[in-house]
Image 1 (cartoon, one colour):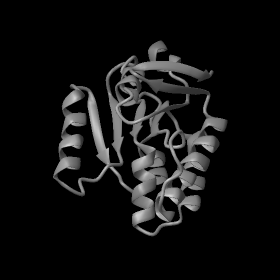
Image 2 (image 1 turned 180 degrees about the vertical axis):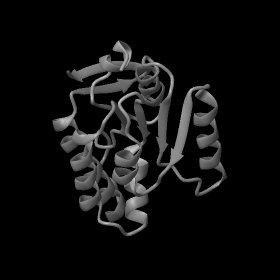
Image 3 (image 1 turned 90 degrees about the vertical axis):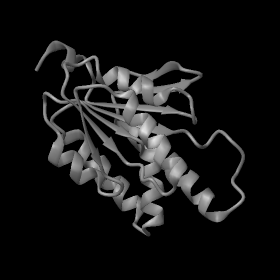
Image 4 (image 1 turned 135 degrees about the vertical axis):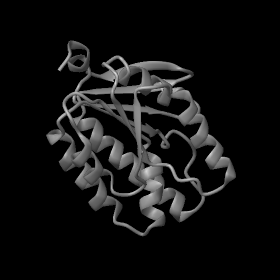
Length: 177
């Protein structure tokens, strides 16, 4: 493993709001390692606008990236695809949580499976997620459940991550590590 890959911690969590610059920052962390980067995309193109967002994310990345689209079974894909020489970027956990809720999966069981998988992965991992708990209390039960699931997942992942960043206005704040 090159020294550049070793500099990336085993688990890094990057949080931020919408359009905060968190994805670009996370990509910059991963690409400090030698090329052969894995991008695990959790988003699904439910409509044309989301399809355009996904395309912009894809266009931003250059050569050296392999992309796997996995909206639901994140832990299994990570266990199968993790290699010591290939940093992995997961973007994003909040879309994954949304997919789980819409598929009527147990969010708690899936988050627990992810938490169990992370320490045993062979290579470094950067997880991106939207911080959704800084705004007003949502008006409907599903939105409140989503906010609560995201907040609990972030706390659990941050507890085991070696490094945690919060990004706003394109500026990363290192919170842990």
